[in-house]
Image: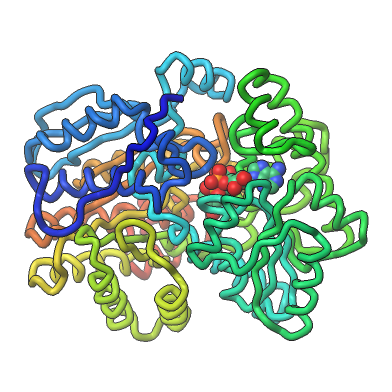
Length: 554
Ligand code: NAD
């Protein structure tokens, strides 16, 4: 991987344009924001989050993308193939300014070996989800979803609160780092294991984690005290999950909840085998990648075996979207799928209503703009009590990373209402610059991922990939500002197809048009996808909110 030492990328703030219009400027700032050292996990390698999820293929491509965006006209579209700008076409003013395809391999070849071979030849890049589609906003991006997941787990298993409970998890990276804060937001105690102390330190610096310790005994002592006093506490424990989880089993310590968010989707770059220091792991990764992957998968199998043991001992265990069960199954852990994924366990009803990780970013760089939109959300949805609670928690506890942003799970009808109201605030000058509106690919109607978002679908359509493609197509037809299609995000090569969209509220009438279409088609895809699969809640939502589903007579 090419490195550019000492180069620091930050998006410009304020109202001065460096491109030929706000649509292009927004793409430019969001690309740069993804690589802001306060946002990206390893900006020097162009890595944003999630193992090797990158924003551009290499620095040369990054510079060329910036140049293209700076020169792009209001009726042109830039094409980006796995992080490389490959063409500019004349399209029309309301079409997307950028179209992106990341990491897409022909299905029979859709595996890590082929990917790495092509990556080495400079022909590919791993785009993860929001890394290569330029709408990553730091750990906050996953925070509300993680908060909602733990809140739902508490409702189902622990009288609606995590107070007095212990959660054991691992992986405090870009996304996984949200777990510690999400648990304390639900009043619980959490031990989050990570092999890399710098990752834990980063969570402490951004207030996602309270303390870091190096010793399991110390972690347990702090956890016990906090649990007894009913206090919320997050403890980052430096260690390897494949060693620490079995240690819990050996000692008969049974946490209330157990999960994991190491980057297990990528055995070469995302997971450190047990018995290896970070440095020794890095050396082996370089000198003998095949051996590394073998050891890494073996460790994951031990890690999952410990999770299954803890489940048998009484813990509530769930997979947190990193495909670790699949690796363990391939390694011979035949009961690896005995614990469920978090989507079927806790999130699917939200998807049926077109809800998902909606987010917006203030291009001004001024936190005040976000605080004003926070007020707007409360005013537009006065009766949504969980939403009000979330907005308060977010305001109190979330430190912005890079351009100020907010995440908020909204459903069909709500997204368009908020989007148009934000555009009005930009138009009136109440907000000091345009707002970028987007979402994670982990959304209701934009992803096919049989071990995650589409696990255990009611009609058995888990592996049907058409929906993700239709999502990208309809958002392009509707005039999103940029649209992306990806393969392998979240769970790794071969296991997912997904699409992203971003639309810019620049205060113009044209933006009203874009927003009013895209913010209906996009969550509408979630409603029709789940209605088609037979979910009653989705069918009701379609009927109530006027989403047409021809085969159901709606
Ligand atoms: P990341 O690569 O930024 O962080 C992974 C972390 O795991 C690192 O801090 C690393 O040090 C740690 N780690 C690796 N091996 C370890 C081991 N053996 N023991 C302890 N720690 C270890 O990744 P991320 O962005 O935090 O994402 C984590 C995973 O979660 C990915 O697989 C990603 O695809 C998935 N994900 C899930 C969701 C969700 O909502 N469920 C959302 C986004 C990403």
